[in-house]
Amino acid sequence: MTQVCNCNFKTPVDDDGNVNWVKEKLLSINSSKMAFSHTIIDGKVGFNSYGSTIKVLPKEHGCKTEWNYNLVPTKGRKVEDLDFFTSSSLQGIGKRITEALQA
Image (cartoon, rainbow, N blue to C red; front, side, top):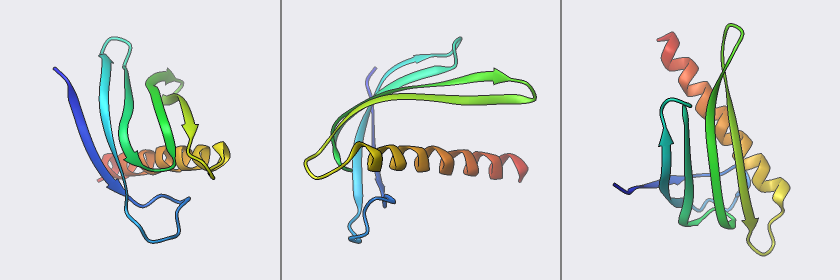
C-alpha cells in the first residue's frame, strides 16, 4: 500500500510569508530496525529531489535519531540553507516529542 502525506509549513529559509508545502511518499518501513524511508514527490521547499532514511538507534539512557538524506537544490538555493531547514525540522520534531512525553 502506498502512503502519501501532504504537509504545509513555514520554513526558516523563507521569509516571504508564503506557505511552503510538500507531498511525501513513504517508500519503506522496517519495524525491527526502527527505520523508514521516504521521498518528496512534489512541493515548494527549495529542492528538486529529496530522499531520506530515518532510523532510531539505541544509546545509553535513551535513543538517538539518524537522518540521512540526498537532495538537489532548486536554482538560487544553497545546500547549506536546506541543511539548516532539515536540521531545524528534526529539532522541532524532537522538541514536540519531548514535550508530549513530559505531559
